[in-house]
Amino acid sequence: MPSTGLRKMATQLNILSQESRPLIPVALDAGPLSSDLDKLKGKRILFRNNYSKECIPLQSLSDPFNILEILHLREFSPNPIKRRIAAVDSSCALIGETEDGAVYAGRVVAVHVTKSKGFTYSRLGPIIIYLQPNGKAGFCGLTKRAVRLMLSDKMLAERFIRTWLERWVQLDLAKNFENSLILVDGGLRSSDLEPQEFSLRVIEGKSQENSNQILGISKASSLRLISSLSSQLDSRVNGSIFLDVTDPIRTLTPCLRCRVLVVRFSTNATVFRVDSSLSNSESDSQVLSDLKFNDVIFRGYPESLRLAHHLSIFDLSTVNSIRAYLSRKYGLVSIPNDDLRATILGKLV
Image (cartoon, rainbow, N blue to C red; front, side, top):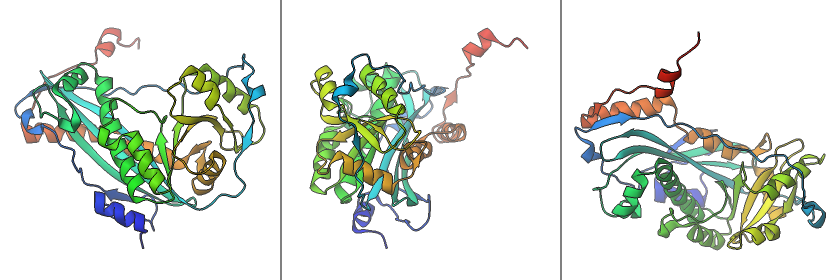
């Protein structure tokens, strides 16, 4: 039988709970998402490739400031408790560009696990969005000026769609789950792109009401301090350890609204930056211990977040299917295009 929290979520997002079987997809409705796809009819379109962006990992650098000497190395709690883990990740792909707009596809996934058993997931999408200057006023809370700005910056548009989808699902988890641990891919930072009605602050408030804990796990950091401390933890022989670097980081970024931890989940594993929400009612030591106890730590990283990443990304066959669907349904005229780099450079053999 599904839990009360999952039954509530099913009411909100039409989820069919199937916790008894591993990695079973669960269908979601598109909810309030809408777009101007009808305005695509008869358009000329240039289908574009959505090139992946490399991620620079936490680098092993020395600690020139000797910060480690003034920080207290801490261990995970020895008494973990059983609780649900819910990890959220999303992806967005640029499908094509018309004379006056751009077509994107977004997808978001929530992976659930308790006590390292029975991974299940809920997936929403692909959701096809057509951004164009004369579209619906107020689409996803955007003004026409904001839409024009996104049409001039593809990375900004992709970030907006991903943020919108992730916040929407995170809020639903925060409202309908109790005593759970919600994992966010990346840092816990408010964004100008997030909708006001389900901003990070609203999600944190709902989590606090239902005794949920929120962690944001980053695979990369641009801060030299975190990079140097990760090198110091790499030299330790034991795992399940972390450093609280909130105070030194706050001197660099006074507007910081979370606790910043440098964490090593297991022996011989990669070190990660972990943001702990200020709304969390339990100690960081306890929350990290519960995460390791209930999830599977694969290569030092939570398996739930790894699965959420892979289940959300678009493969070429999915992108081609979306292109074929749009072309057939809306009578699009595809403009031929070549890979300019390949055309110019060619091959030596």
